[in-house]
Image 1 (cartoon, rainbow, N blue to C red):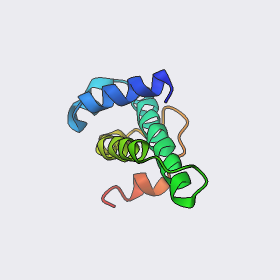
Image 2: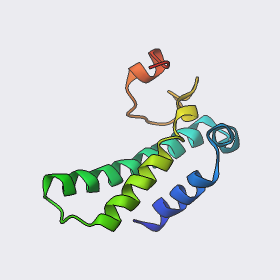
Image 3: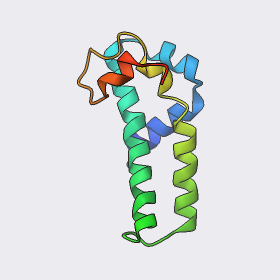
Image 4: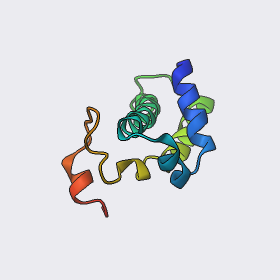
Length: 103
């Protein structure tokens, strides 16, 4: 894992979801932070998927670590999909995220 991703993960683990959205500040910063969390989660899922498909050699310790990181990070992005965070920085989030937030 790159150093910047490790910093993002460490910071993310240390903040609660509610405190996270309030502490980041400007919408563009919140969007970039959300994207960083999603990027780290995507990389972990990619490694797990590679192991499941047999494309990557299975490594129990790496799989457990990746799954734990995804579990921890998955609680964080919710508040970072709030009102006004659909604009301010480029985003690949589906329009449904903004039009159907309860889902």
